[in-house]
Image (cartoon, rainbow, N blue to C red; front, side, top):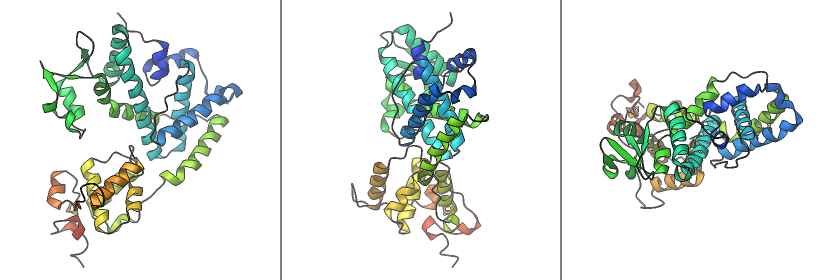
Length: 335
Ligand code: SF4
């Protein structure tokens, strides 16, 4: 029996293959986006990108035709803006939007609709088989699939010891089940944008994308100071951050403590994290101040040793690191 999704599902999950199929069947052409009645779609798309890169979830939902087209136009615009940190933030925001809807749907939809979503999103897109308990309140995932995803999460609740496990399956609530694939959803959207080849853009999109690019550039084209004086581990972390890629927690800690140790002002350190896909200025500022010992426990954190960084795969030693035991010594010995 084939599993069918409703049109409401296509509005909430326009990245599904079925949404692309709808566009193909409707024989929609790019040039149609220049029609006056498409102006609203282009405005919505620009608003959705702006809300997304600001770290919020754009949660308006219209009819599925509107949503599928808006989603397509956002992809084109983000591609045309061509700023990797903007793409990363946008993709994460889209993943969070889908996460919100999916969590709600898994809680309230009937059994058949839930099975359709589990199959189309978790199964078809990510090769993940999710079962449900008889009362439909909990979801089950194979231990190996769970570990492959949860090992990237730092919170204690994701440790296996804190989970209900039985018969080789981990039991999860709806929100936890969806959280498991948030990163994969962001990667999926990101790779769709990368894989797109832009056609000659309709004028209306081109103009709107340029307005957005000019507005976003001062915030996201941040380049760090000349990084040649920094130790290779710090330099690497800054390069990853500047590309808008996700830096592990341990690398963020190393970067922030190093910058504090060499006397960088908090404002500048916070700015360095601006391209992180999950950047939140208030939280980042608090964390930097916490590491500096001016907030929270008032304990000042020191830069991890080279030995520790090696065990965390954060060391990228070159011959200039010869004999040092902490990144703060980099460059000093040679002098
Ligand atoms: S040896 Fe130390 S300073 Fe050099 S890259 Fe490794 S961790 Fe960084």
